[in-house]
Every structure is written in structure tokens, then in C-alpha cells.
Length: 394
Image (cartoon, rainbow, N blue to C red; front, side):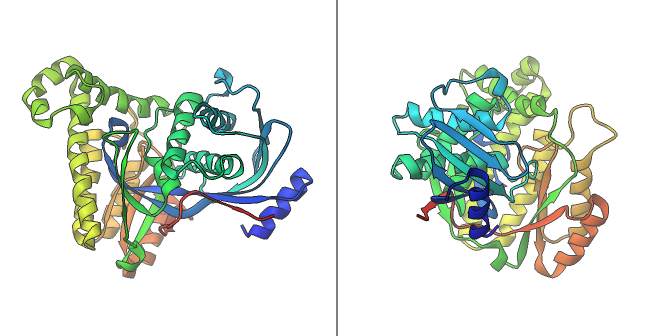
């Protein structure tokens, strides 16, 4: 949406003039499927689908957000404690971000915002992270004089989602949205993640980056997602550790029979995926840094196989009739043949897959995918250089 139009809608909604414009992008996971919550490595990028807002301070002690197409959400800054009845809601995200700002000693204050987004919910591009980063970016620009850096805003956003919203997500989504560009992230020390910016543009490599909506819904899959970090954590605990990044892969292999006996085969397989995927990200980063797109795509294929066979985040447990993700991957592989690559994107089980399609085959690929999965299911994305940002307009 054009800035002028966004400001007009703010004025029509709140009866005042907007003072700030803010934006935060969606993200795409380029490598490291389900590694971040185990303090592993990831490769991610901000994309050109964004959540943006026109905003202005208020003196009511409230944060009031009107997201286009949704009910208005208002929270009182006088009470920033978690609310059980708000779990899973937008209000929880706003309250959690404001609470963490305050806990860390940053000033907070009221504001009104009118928000619009092209990062559609359930798109696999992390609309929730973009929204959290947007709220943090607004508070930072309005009341903290920009003192909170992009990494800290990402941590604040994750805190809101974990503690207030009730979703045990890792930090990759928020970090990619907040920092922007293509980045390799090592979460060995989550308090001080190591971030490496990578100057790579898929649009100039001869390949289009596509996100494909499988048509499956994330609803009622919270237990499926939560089981992955829970089972990986159980393996780590067996070795006296908290997360798998702390476990020696050689020791894991030596005690694999014990792991299977105590925790079952799925937990063992998911741990195998983590160790392989964590190392794979190193090779993916090196390939992109060297401009070697073909090597990178080979690693993408290997990542996809690992998610299918070891991580098992393609088909929800016990599902036989509706296997949307499996169909999407099978059709993408058929259409690509020996070129390009595809893999599950993000959490899995529902939502989207990712494909890297040769430019000269893009239209045929899109037509084939949409014939099976429906019109508008194939989205071509571009990398966005900027992460969360805010500017003063008056």
C-alpha cells in the first residue's frame, strides 16, 4: 500500500495525523530446518512481503492497533502481565513486546497504529514475527530513541511469542525479519548470536525463489510442532544437556541404541536430522558466499530429504487422506526434473514448501503447480535488504 493511502486510513480510523511510518518484512528459511530451537545454525532471508503501519503517539497509556480486515486490539500499559485468556492472540504479542521492553529498562508509551500486511497468515513467511518486530520497531523509534538494536528487537519479539502468545518457537523468524537481507545465524549462544550477512541475490543467479502454498491449514497442529523441540530436547537431556547443540554427535552415534531404547525411534531420527542439518548450513553459507548456486541447490535437496525421512515434518501423525505437503513436494519435484530444488519450508506439516526454479522454466512450473494446488498458490519472492525500520513523517 502506498504511504499516502496508509496515512489516510490512519487518519480516518483515529481522527488524527500519523507521525511515523514503520515496516517489518516476512522471512524465508533458506537452510536449517528446525535447528534454531536447539541453538543450531540457520540460513534465512527477509523477503519483499511486509507488514507496515502508520502510527502516532497517544497519551492514553494504551497501545491500540487496527490491522486492516481484523478487529481493533487495545492493551493497557498499566498492566503488562501475561494473560492466560490472551494466549494465541494478537493482544498477547503486543503486550509481550511492551512488557519485555519495560523489563529491559527501555521506556514504553502509548501509540495508535493502522497496519496492513502482504505477509498473509499461514503463508509460511512468518506473519507473526513480522508483526512482533513491527511493534518493537515502533516502540524503539517512538520511545527508546533507537537504542534497541535489531538483534535485541528480535529477542524481544521471540520472548513475546514464547511467553505471552504460548508458542515455543526459536529465534530465526524474528531475527531474519528484524535484521533483513540474507543472513547466516549461529545460535550456539542465543544471547549473543553470530550473524553473517551474505550478499546473494537469487534473482541474479538465474533462479526464481518460489514459495508454494500447499493448501493445508496450521490449525490444530500446535502439538505436532511442539513435539519436535520436545523430542530433540529429550535426547539432549539423556546426555545431560539442555539442547542438541551441546551434544557430541560422535557420542550420540555411540549411544544410538540407548537413545532408541529409552526415547523411541522418532526422537532418535529427529536428532539425526539436527546434527546433519546443522552441519549442512555451513556448506550452504559457503556456497552462497562463493556464488556457487548449483552447490547450494544440492544442499537444499539434501535438506529436503532429511526433513522428509528423519525430521518427519511433512505429514501430520496418523493422517492418510489429506497429505497436502507431500503432494506439493511430489509435484514440484516432477515439474523441476533434474533442475532446481525444493524442500519443506519452515515448521512443516502444513503451510508452504520452497522451490528454486530456473528462470526459463518459471512460467511452466507455476502453471503446473497451480493446476494441482489452485490459482495463486505459487508466489515468486525477492530478497529485501532492510529489516524492521521506522521513519518520522511529521
